Length: 350
Image 1 (cartoon, rainbow, N blue to C red):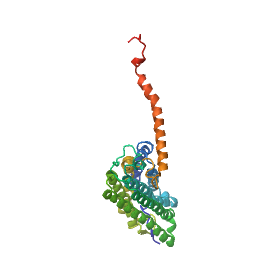
Image 2: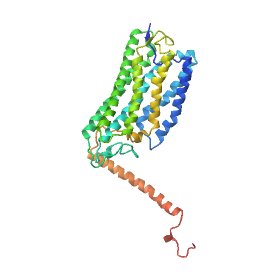
Image 3: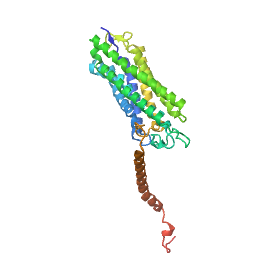
Image 4: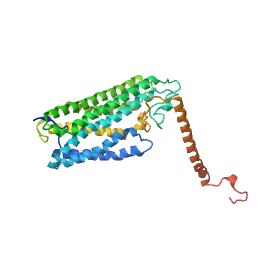
């Protein structure tokens, strides 16, 4: 009985070399990932989904390399379900982070001179996005609409993951159950199809920001466009190939996703774009490029005058604490190397 072919196929002996390669490539990104997490000037928590993805991919490809050398592991029900679940939902965690970047990119330019202090860009030291001048107007209505739209996209991305998890986590259950296989295939199409549509919506938002805003973040627009294209490639690959069926998980017949050509397509159009996106996200200083600060544009609506007063008060208290800590250090530095002449006794030997 035919059933949906596993995306990426199973790990045959020919998968050993590419599995080791990508395990090594992802392992090499981990120092960069941890640097971005712990370095205060580049840390942003909105990339935690991609950080977890990078760590998990090392595990995935180590297991895939082990499967390539072991017949028993290759046909393991648990590992097969895990692989399909990981490949079916992992790219969505990156796309979720891209929604947060899109939000910062389109919302930050809507702030005027008097409200700019509320933006995540204003809280980003050395931000690459241009700050407003006195003449720049504030656009609160546009900002509210953009926040609502990106919030809906984020929720839909989260929703698209659910059918993918349901379908892929029990992939092997459809091997002997035609109804289950048909139902799971529909869920996988929904998951990848919705993700592809949402990625197009993000790209439209980026283009709109470039055309509409007076001071768009041009560097961020270029970077985000590339990242959306890479993630869209993964979604499109899945949508195009999920109709394939096979009669055995380890079959090497055409459309089984186990032929050399199908394997090459999987690594080039699914695995490679995910890795390149991870490298882009942690290779660039995303905090400065998109003006994300630590938490991105986390506000649902603009702050009230009372909230702004509290924020200004906390900022003043924080600056005062810094000034007090710096005071003794500056004083000790000023007398550490020499004794000021005015403090020397008149009979001191020079």
